[in-house]
Amino acid sequence: MLEISYQVKNLKVSECFDYLSGNTGLTVRTIHNSRSEEFDCVVLSSSLVDDTSLGYIDSKTILPNGKELKLFKGKEGIVISRNGYAGTMSYLEPSIYTLTDHAYILFKKDRCKYDIDLHWFIFSFQKHIREKYLTTKSGNQTFVITKFMKEFVFDVPEINFQKDIAEKYKKINKQKEILVAQKKKINDFNLERITGYKIKEEKLFDIFEPHQGNAVFTKKTLIVKAGKVLYQ
Image (cartoon, rainbow, N blue to C red):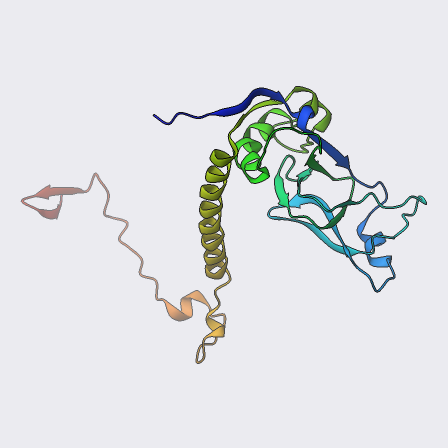
């Protein structure tokens, strides 16, 4: 049996993590109306299946309410959907990000004294977090980050163990992505794309000739003898 060494057990998430909430008023219209040659900032929102990005915007954009964009830059983080696929987590590489009020960014505090791999954190706890910190099990779900930050505790293994688990999950996810892509190709398959084929609509009875059975054949009118079906 594998023996796991831990840096710490029952660590409160608020001891090592903080979060950034979204920008009120940052909408698709605001993004489209942004006039600049420097679209240097990724806009994050709630998850729509596998994508949380709404595109890019100038990091110096002023919102309709007169406020500057909240920015997250220069460090790795985790984007968490507030609604939509609520509680869904995705890893963020160091870059420049901002976000709508449909998402949060969870990040490690500079003073955190424990080594925590963010990929490992997502793979290990996303399912549990989604089960426990959503407002409802179905329908219009919302991720309650204040409750999560107040209540969630977790054990932190040694960093090498975390990285090993994270790498295994990455390989599994890579294979999953390949399968999803193959499934999409099958669903999108169209014979018209193959030279020599043309799909057209035909009436069913122009292709097949129906044959009506005999109403006389019922359970009561048939008997089976020596493998032959006979009239009574």
